[in-house]
Picture 1 (cartoon, rainbow, N blue to C red):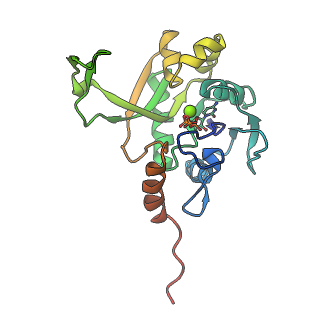
Picture 2 (tube, rainbow, N blue to C red; picture 1 turned 90 degrees about the vertical axis):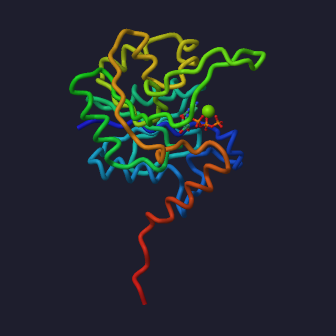
Picture 3 (cartoon, rainbow, N blue to C red; picture 1 turned 45 degrees about the vertical axis):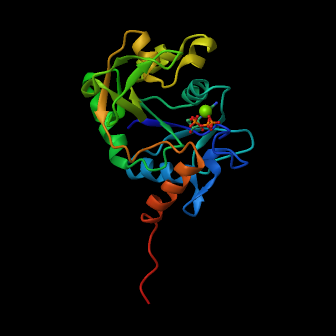
Length: 218
Ligand code: CTP
Ligand code: MG
């Protein structure tokens, strides 16, 4: 069975909740708990969490996060037992067990497999002067999410780079791409969005309230 690296060490500047984002209460429990539930429902029990100093997560190996997201992934990988790996952002609490199993299954013929939603907006390129220079072919574009699954050796190779390279990575799949590995997209849904702003938190609160167990009817 695969091991999970759950990255939760960010400070949540853009959310501005006064505490690290993964530990902000969302629909009655710390945000990170929603991802832990989905991982366990997918049968993934070995979970390493990269957390901010002073935050332990019960039932998981907890390691201190790094200065950047990919440094947090590298720190978590160093503490992970053997096996293929699935990396997930604690900031995506709407993830489902199927997102994890689908990404891991797609490793059968790729070094890396990443959850991705088809782009629905038209995407254009513009210069510093805001003049449009190109309209991109939307049928070939994907908005990339986590989970991202990796063959263990591919992720180890991808992360064995200087911190300056890690700092440029907005996802870990890019690190595999630049070392020549194969990366496959696995269709996901826009519902697996990342909580970044207070507006996102409000939407997530509504959506997750529906997943809470209901009290028995009187
Ligand atoms: N993350 C991490 N270590 C870091 C930076 C980010 O583990 N040094 C994690 C976050 O906890 C989050 C995920 O990476 O689960 C995606 O990052 P992001 O949404 O940018 O979260 P924050 O960095 O916390 O938010 P902000 O950029 O607004 O401060
Ligand atoms: Mg960040």
